[in-house]
Image (tube, rainbow, N blue to C red):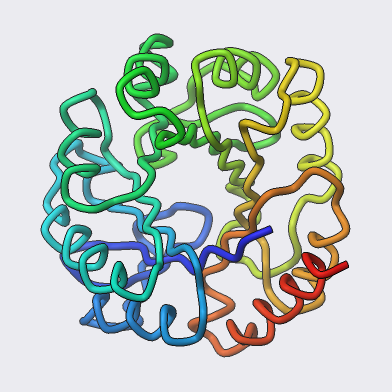
Length: 253
């Protein structure tokens, strides 16, 4: 299981929102590349980067910053998973060519069910499906629009299309640091098994992590492949090094 420290970008700065509400923006650092280098120095193997501007408008204004993050941490063997505004195979190609290890698609893949398959056919193992939801209903365009689709409608097709990961974000918990949705995540993991997943697609938890106790609760969730944490790190409530030690101890068992 991997920890994915998160870097959310608006206007080239490292920010966090609460429940995806752009009006709640808090700027934590003007230099996200420096933030990424710090995560790498602490031993993170992955960094999760989201272009929030592109997620809302489709305009990839932070793509240069994403590429710089990827090139900066690559010498340390750190992989970058990036999303936000990936609406086409061409968008995915630009990110992957810039050094990103895995692209995350959300809105476009829900509106065009063939998108994950088309990306995965060219870059096997390098596309993830973002499933951002409120009470099980998946949201679109930076969580600003309802899709009318539910998690159970999308898990199977994403796996069949070749998704390497499902990033499950409980929007109501995002930025709240009040604990992850363990029951909901266990349900999604069960959905992947029912879809015939043989381990090629992992489930990554996002939303609600507020402490090392939350990480410990997720570690014992059978079938979970990763944990994204953001605000708790920036607010000093979760130590990246401590979380990585906890996860590595699980791997050793």
